[in-house]
Amino acid sequence: MLAPLTRLSSLASKPLTLQCTASRISLTLQSMMSTSSGQPDLYLKGVYSAIPTTFGPDEEIDFEKFTFNVSKWEKVPLKGYAIGGTNGEQPFLTEEEKLKIIRTLRQLTKKTIIAGTYCESTRATIDLTQKAAQAGANAALILCPYYFQKKMTEDLIYEHFISVADNSPIPVIIYNNTFVTGIDISVNTLVKLAHHENIRGVKDTENIKLANLSNQTKDLNFSVFAGSAGYLLSGLLVGCAGGINALSAVLGDPICEVYDLAKKGKWDEAMKLQHRLVKPDVTLMKEMGVPGTRAAMELYGYYGIDIGINRYRRNRITTISCDPSKEHMVPDFKAL
Image (spheres, rainbow, N blue to C red):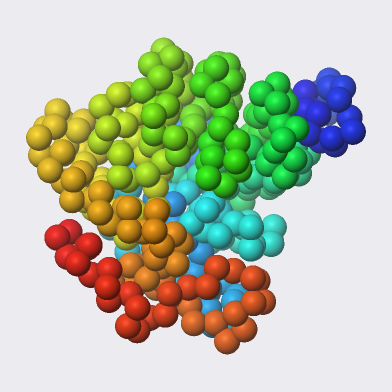
C-alpha cells in the first residue's frame, strides 16, 4: 500500500499492482547480484559505524579521502557501515551524491551497508530506497517524515513504513531520532511494525525504551540497536542486538570490544571499558555534534575536517578548525 504520506491531500490507500510486485522482485534479484555481500536475510547484529561524508575545501565530496578512511575502518571489527545519516550530513547531499557514496563504499567493502534513504514523502522514500539497493546497499535506515510533524499520527507513521517496506527490495531499519524529527514513535507502533517481514530493526535514540522494545520483539526477526555508544552496554544487557553510532568512526576498536566482551559474558571488563567511553561520547554527541566527530577523527589519523573556502555553498554546520580548537578534546580521548 502507498501510505497517505505520498501526498498529504490523499487519505486513501491504493493497492499495489502486479507491476509493482514484479518490480520489487526484480529489484531484489538485482540487489543480490550487484553486491558482494548482498543477501535477503541479513544477520543484523553487532556494531555498525555511522560514518561521515568527506568533503573537500570546495565542499565537493572528496572520494580519495573517503577511500582512505574506509581503508582504516576496514581494519576495525565492525559489522558494517551506516551512511547517509546524521553523521553523514544527509540533508546536504544530492540524490546522486548519496548513490555515488553507496557505490563507492560497495567497491571498498564486503561488510553490510545500511543506507539512509529518508525522504519526506512515501513515494520519494520508496524511490530512493530502490535506487540505494541497486547501488549496493544491504539495508535502508529511514527516519519518520517530520516536516508536518504536528499532523503525523501513529497511524500515518505506521502506514508510511509499511508502504516503504512493501516496496523495498532490501530490509528496512526504522530510525527513531526524536532529536531530529521531534517525533518519538511509540513502542506500540514500533512493535506492530516489527511484525512486517521486511522491517528488520530500529535504531532508537531514546535509551529508556530499549528494554521494552527488546522484550516485546525478542521472538521476532527484528533487531533493536542502541543509538549511541555511551549506552551500548546497557542496551546489550536488556537485549539489544548491537549499536549504530557515530563514535565508532573514531573509537571503533574499543566499542567493538565492549560488544564482544558482553557477548562472552565478561560483564565486569565490558563495564570498565564502557565507563571510559562515556565521556568521549558525551563530548562529541551531546556537546559538539558532527563537527566534533570530524575533529576527533583527525586525532586518530582519519580525514575529518574540511576547511572550506566557500563555507555557505551547502550551508553546512561550521566545522571546528584544525588548530588549535580540537586540542581541548585530547583529555577526553587519551585513555582510549
